Image: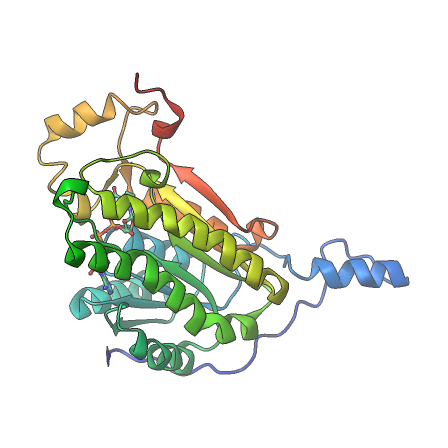
Length: 300
Ligand SMILES: NC(=O)c1ccc[n+]([C@@H]2O[C@H](COP(=O)([O-])OP(=O)(O)OC[C@H]3O[C@@H](n4cnc5c(N)ncnc54)[C@H](O)[C@@H]3O)[C@@H](O)[C@H]2O)c1
């Protein structure tokens, strides 16, 4: 793992909120209620976002990059984990310049499981308590079922699915430390629900992420960590450059979308920010489809 642009360490444990939402106190019932309500912190001048750091895998491009910027806008320190070191640095710089928040680039291939603990430590030492994870790193390879190879299957699963599980494991102690308010968002896809016969391993990995979402939410909920997934539709990013080869193609695809347009990365990022915020304090084990309505329509 190569690491870049460390910023001044912030290692103190975050203080608990002084007041409950209700502001009531004085009785045993009220005390119990107040203790429970601490998971939902007010004020929300930063859209209900906790002040803890967030790790964003695949943060160097597309949906990950847009998420890093939206989270930085809400005042959260961000760690851009990407195998493209240059892009990770550039996005971290943009977060610092535009929003004055702490941000670091971390060059890492998230399939290298043995490097994850060091990357967590580096992030913790530079940004302080880590209260969020966005797993946006992903790959898509053409591989209809009759052309499938072990190599394509293994690579796709390693990045899209296995890394999500291993990252969750590596970050769990940090996320527990950061409670209340810790949360994870996996970036799945509408392909978790509807098939694209040209990318069978991708579809399987994205459906698998929803199983992982439920399992991790069940296991980590008692520790105060929420786990959810977003399922984007057609999004204009580097990943879809080939598909969206011309404006005519984009216009044609748009005719099949109830909202009549493909998404920008920011359309997904704002939902990710919501899921990581205390506005979503009672949402876990869930997935939100952000596809302009594509999966709600009949195709025949
Ligand atoms: N673009 C879409 O239409 C779309 C639709 C549905 C779901 N998604 C999902 O959203 C996520 C982000 O997609 P995007 O369109 O922003 O892609 P993108 O290609 O623009 O960005 C992906 C980023 O992940 C990084 N990355 C890839 N493999 C990595 C690895 N092993 N370790 C570390 N970093 C790695 C890349 O360097 C890149 O910066 C993916 O999981 C993708 O499957 C995208």
